[in-house]
Length: 181
Image (cartoon, rainbow, N blue to C red; front, top):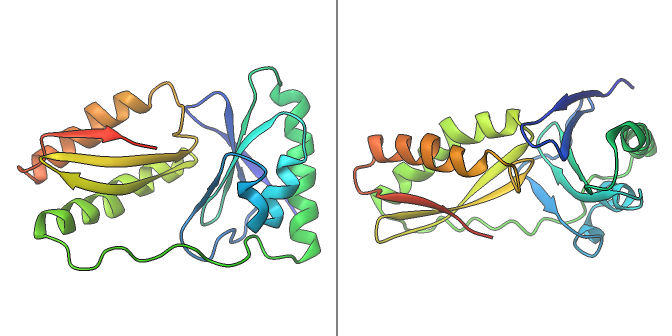
């Protein structure tokens, strides 16, 4: 098995591409070992000293490190762990707690979701992260950043200058964009 790695705009994260599907659908973001209990892969990765978070995308894994750890030490351990996991044949994630919360939503919210899904998420995924729509209220779009995007030095610029400007252009009701946990 050959696993490619790619840098991300966030120097504390690396994107690992195992050349196969990681998640059937959706994404999963783990910031602690306790959260990772439903993912055998994330649990193994948190067993490596220096890993601070794990993000699972459709065909990639983004791993964040502690500031005190160097990638030169951590990267080989992460690669070996990912190979070990896929060689074992275990599922990447057990269960699925992602619910479809779309329900009946306004035309504006439908437009915002469509723009995020088709224009923003693919670009953010290339950088090893994801962006989740959390709501729209009084002209403000609330978004949750995951993976490499969470804590990235350029994430606020991406939100304000990239995503906010695009949404305001296509959806006049949008006044601003805010990141939420």
